[in-house]
Image (cartoon, rainbow, N blue to C red; front, side):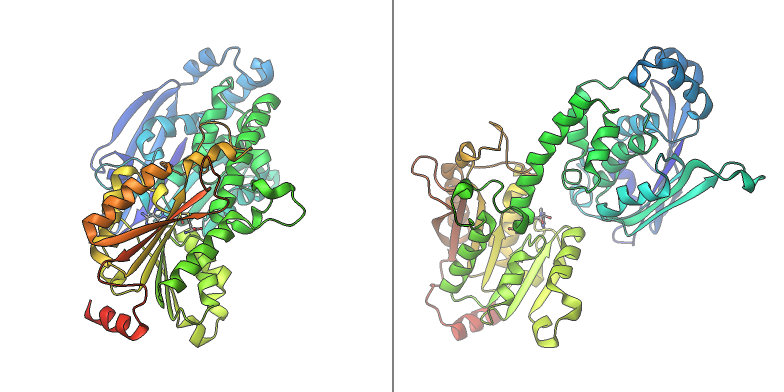
Length: 497
Ligand code: SAH
């Protein structure tokens, strides 16, 4: 069983960084023993331009048969074992997926102390699995991988016997994936989808597999169009487990809809859903509050930091007072969706001249972000690990220093009012923290003081007398700007900065 992971690079960002991200040194060949044989990791190529890591799992058929006793799917061990003895040693299956998770555990978790930014950013990746058993064929392979941001999904059927083409194709495909994805996301997709394609797990599926699936599916599974098939097959058709996973994923999807794709949120989680009128989704209320604050500050050149799929940029474009709009996000996938939403390729020259979308991480200072009237961080800070927050604080308030900074974040106190959210859960799988009003004000107050800003707070959404509003907004104003400064003064300031 074999799989390769490759990337390309430049002298500044060498491809061999892959070794750091996988926690496996490119100069060494290593062997790990797994419950079903030995997993070898080595690098067929490792230069600054190109680097490829290979995972080879050498299955011990005897161990497999011994361990397999009584563990076949649906309690039919003999049928399952017969298959193991035939194809298991070379077909990429759940065995490879388990080895992948064991050998690249930290990489799967997105952990990389040496290069945290690289681990958090999309890389050009090429994954190849030469013999992938695919129940459902190339067509299903496409349906599973294409929605996940891969630019190329190539599944070529492997003939049953190359000498006898008339025998037709085997149930194996050669899979090649190419695209810009975070390594952790790519590995987690493979971890789930290899056994889904094989549709025959080598071990008995216990209830903790639901948690494993939810963890590995974070960020991509909840809104995957083939989600029912994925959960069903991953959980070996155990109906009770599948239902549990689906319910949990549905909650994640609704919460993600709130954060990323407002338009599909609508009634799902809004507490006023049972009133006659169609409620205004919270995300739309958030954008309205942001637009108000930007207008109040007299801003015309605006940064949307962590712009996601471009909904706010789209609103800003509708108002001609916003003459320059820059959307920045670390996710290529989000930016691609944003540019499609804005129809950037079909926009007139003048309109297009007002907007720029740019990939970048907010935890790095970027000279190009200086001199703007305002910056918006809408539902972004909670996506950063707490220990990366000071880096963002410095990049925005210390280095870019716009006249106004708007920060919104969930108010965790409000979570008890969301009926669909289980107690103690955050609203979105990727939220690293959610703050109370006091915690947010504590942070914002300190930031303002450290960087010479004043700060005021405003509620977004219904301001509950007990738990406050669902979203909290902080409006920072640089101490040497006043909200009444005229545009020309601002322009001069910007030029001077
Ligand atoms: N501002 C949008 C999207 C919020 S979701 C809205 O209000 O709807 C959070 C966004 O922050 C995601 O698009 C994510 O890719 C982005 N993000 C997270 N960490 C980032 C970082 N370090 N640098 C830039 N963007 C980041």
